[in-house]
Amino acid sequence: MRGVTATADAALDEAWSIATDEYPTALAFASDGRCCAIGDAGGTVVVVDAAEGRVLARHSADAAGVLALAWQPGTRRLAVGGQSGVVALYGADGCEAETPLDGGWLERLAWQPDGRRLVAVQGRTLHQLDADGRRLASSAPQASTLTGLAFRAGGRQIVTCCYGGVAVHDAGSLAVTRRFRWNGSLIALALSPNDRVVAAGLQDATVHFWRFADGRDAQMSGYAMKPKSLAFSADSQWLATSGGPAVIVWPFDGRGPEGREPLLLPEHPAPVEWVAYAPRSAGLVSGCRAGELRLWVPPVRREPLAVKPLGHAVAGLAWGADGDDERLAVADAGGTVRGWTL
Figure 1 (cartoon, rainbow, N blue to C red):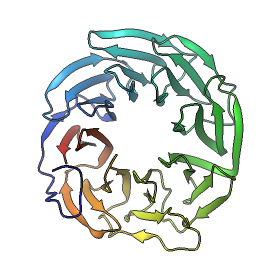
Figure 2: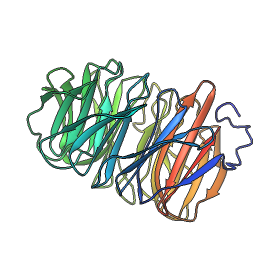
Figure 3: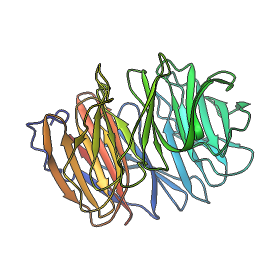
């Protein structure tokens, strides 16, 4: 089918599957949606054809274990970070550069939207590298370990979160230019595609958000568990959150969620670990600890379009887009990664 729609036959029959050597730790689609990288706890990265699952490359990337993958926009160059604290860049002919950083693992990587710079999170510090892997700058240590990382749409600002709130950094100097303070431990971060809102999941089982325009903030509470996975819809109108057996979806249209009830989707058989919106359509996917995957199109339809039992807990989700096709990859704790074209 061409994207996820409310009337589509979304049976989620597998397009392909592949077994990882160790526990799968990272998934990422290239910007053209035509290949998908899979990292595991043993340090291997496998690149597969996203339509067929055919293995295109296999790299021994980080002997201590892979934690983060990021494709350079508009290219087939892949950045890899992991437990060893080295950023590695891989191209068509294998490893092109390896840059050791100051110590400690690298859990998050993000490319500037134009692909000119790469940012890596290492504990409380941001590091900036150029497109060839040379380190350009490092930030002052933040108040605590950075738990979220994203570029704003224009690429001139970087957003991070940690205990104490959200920080906005200049993408050139990495200096903090603005803070949204909150007395709590922020564990997940999501930016709306329209660049107006930053949302965070907190250790105290709440979701907090701020509007960039005026700094106005609000909090959503009542979660059974800490919401460690958040995702905005492609049109920025909805924010899906984990935090219990049900996916909770908040409205972010012109009025915002304040004073309004969220959509509460039918419960999974176990707590939801992952939520992710499709890159173009209204499709939403969620995965739980019991190994059940569900595909939704809220608010058009509140029952799932499809339910797929995986046999093991969901370990990761990723979406990609190739022309009119949307592609989904799902890893489970048993070491299987499955892919679909929707």
